[in-house]
Image: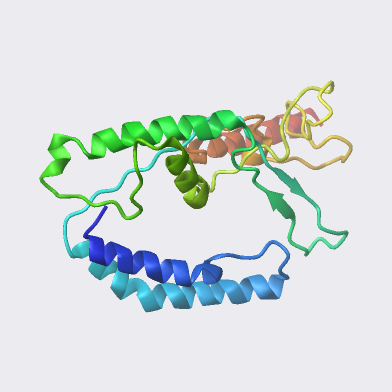
Length: 217
């Protein structure tokens, strides 16, 4: 929530340059690199606009999220070529509970940001909605929802009885000798917070396991 004219200007710029900020899932490695170069160019070109917008007046922002979503996506192979980008389907809001939770949270967020302590700043929403219209709120969320870039669980840890478990309790990939996985992909479910520290812990634990197994040999 920043000065309206500046905010609208930045929003318009990013909206018109949307494709430069997206890497198509079917693109080749060369195409993805080209898109990254385009992204860098766009960021440099509009950096002065963004800085000017944010410094034009005082502002504040707030976002909401589903820490433990019921919906889950998929990652699958596109082809036998290991250089081909995988097929990623986030399946946002596949479960109704997730969108219902965000609608309720958005209303709470609105009450906070429209409360008296914030009123003196005269905030104006970049994307205004009618807070009494659940359908409008839901559509706004569906139109603008994004990921926090903390994907997990594509190689989950689990017991032998779990057909979807990729690694065992010692991070060993089932069916492939000498291979372990030590990152956020082994989490059976996402943590209720940033995945950085838990992922570091997984790496530290993996190092301990490797040393333990080496001593036994």
